Length: 639
Image 1: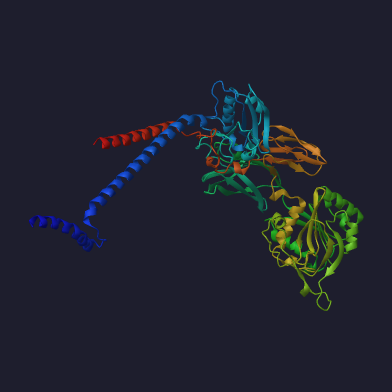
Image 2: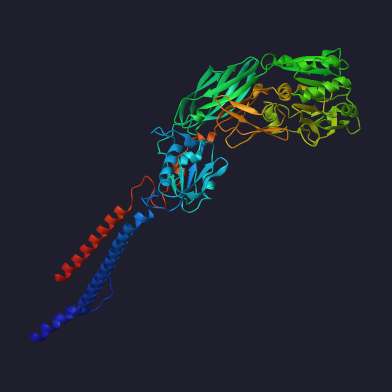
């Protein structure tokens, strides 16, 4: 009986244990007899997963170190420098960046352009090369086919880096076996190998000049507005007149790299050579600008009065005289008038502009003299009024008229009577034209009302219209001079233009423009790659550079075409023509070399260390890791 009890109690314990565990853990009951078997099975599964992970780990380590060793062997070949080794004879196409920034002087005293030629010469000493320059006019081929024994300096000659270039466009025309030598300041996109000859800290202190505008402040006082570009900071701007320092100021450039300096000059009538200077920096070409100023003094206006009155207020030239007094010494012009019929006695040759104000007819001799006056460079302003006969005006001044006169018109009310209440409103003037007068947009002329005027046919030259499309101001050139037609009166008989706030500045700007008064302008300037043209016949086509040099311009179809080959001011002695070849402001802006792909062949950059040593070390580390895992497995099995 005792043996049975001993055998039953363990069986009962095995059977009741799952029930007790279920009550305590809320898990499904199962016989305790099978619990060791489940534990063993789970242990086997964990062991199997561990072994599988270990095998994957060994496979990954083995693949990784084999790949690293393979890349370490191959990388020096596909990442090697373009510089040829001794005995290599593969032909190479070299493209040298000839932009203006390549004239920047580096820390070693050489310009970036000279460095590029030295690197190119190393290539030419080892292999056949072809040579091209990327200039302002695109790709300039120096050596079209590869050949050995090339002297780059002799082939390039006296060509100097100048202007802004498109390096990407030039490089797109190169063959696969090519090399671009640049300072890294010209933006570049492409797969062609590039070698940057400038270090990252060179040339960043460069500043230069941009646009220069001259305006009259009053009397003999003039204001210069000078654009300065470059990295942030303060710099000094100095102005020289005929070699003498006359004005200086300081300007602080913001982070945008662009600021404007204001200089005031006192100049009597005459022509002057102006030179602007910045302090010396790594590139001196853009620290200087040279140009001519023509200070002409007051504009001389000769007016032919076609409607003279005893009452000054009612006179045709009353408001013109008021404008002369209002400007006074600030921006003067002188007015001399003659009555219509006495124009043959007028001092035409002592005038800059002639005003025909509401004139009915003109003396034939005066018309002939007036035509020669305008053709030689004088100005003519024609205004109409009640005395103007369209057919007579067209017959007398057909050669000078900027438009064909048809007939006078008048605004009428509903009953057909001429009425100021039915007047037309002037539309906004052309922006470029109004700015050339020195006025802002609108210029105080937007509410001008016109109730009588002259209908014309104008194919071109209309710069101001009324709201129904009729021409109000037409302007065209004639020979070396200019002619303007105001299709309404210059007093208050036909419009209220004379009492508008913009009338005085409009009249002054028109007189300056018609007379060719260059007091608010400077001599022309062009950028590298551009051609300067002059539309009138000249006696001499030879230009001399102020700093030395002589060059002949081309005369084609009575037009002068001139392309300077060096920076600075070029002058023509007899005709007083002048043009400045200046640097592009883009060359002086604070660019960064990150804009350029700094690639040597198709591997590492010029300043990076080679990758193959790192790959070799990494492969050895992975190999050691694999050995450690295998050793751990061996010890586990031995235990």
